[in-house]
Image (cartoon, rainbow, N blue to C red; front, side, top):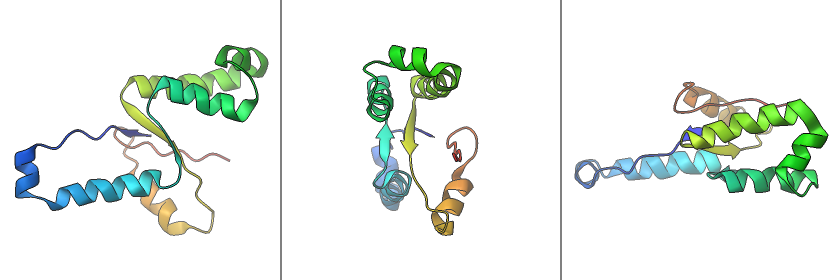
Length: 115
């Protein structure tokens, strides 16, 4: 999860044009070919797509507390202006794994490992 990047002031970009490239590189590293979710509608679609249920409510009713806790965590982050990226990193890809872990600051970037 990462906070939406703010627009960079035109004057700052003129003074430091390479910043634009860093932002693009960071987004490519974070998102790449992964699912990037920025709205509650996209979050619902993501979860429903993997479940076979027709609605989030139906999924919560059938799958119970675990799903609701997980879903509510991501919902809260989206409402707090975060983007959610579900990125699969192979165990042998130590470079990407370490890069993502180094970005984790618990506030602007939140990296979680799932089994």
